[in-house]
Image 1 (cartoon, helix red, strand yellow):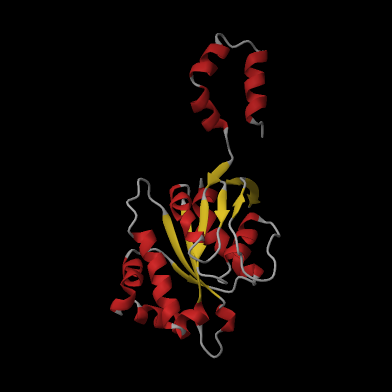
Image 2 (cartoon, rainbow, N blue to C red):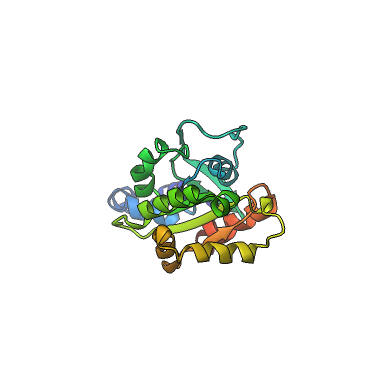
Length: 223
């Protein structure tokens, strides 16, 4: 398949009348028409040690993740990846820490994304009330935004593999029960918003591959 530059050069070679003037006036429209590369902005916020950096690496096909938590915020440049023979450009973003300092970048992350993933550790969520309350506040920050464009919000529970003798549907049921508690009203509002609640094991490559295809890139792959 011919690329954008090849098509433009062929048109010039055959001397289509006034092509350069036409191209100058309609440059943006023509380039969008010929550009087969898809663009998407993905931001991740969430709790400490919930897999934010690891998930960024898996999405961006990089290997920055080291032992321990992200103690600082790192700017990530635009990155082109290939999914099912289609090139997708991931827009620049910031890998933030899970503490209050990281949330200072929330406004910037929110404004520049098409998809925002909010991560939490399932085991800590189920066993620690302070953790649930803190997490609910982060969801509230997302839901109370007056947005100019529609964003997809994904609530992602990690470390599903650490929940012994408890299956995914039982964990999901327990999370929904907490959503009925007025202490975590933001969680209830999220559930009502019909955005996806996803639970999984980030260290499972097959699970990650399906998560990327189904929840992040499916709409782009259909275009």
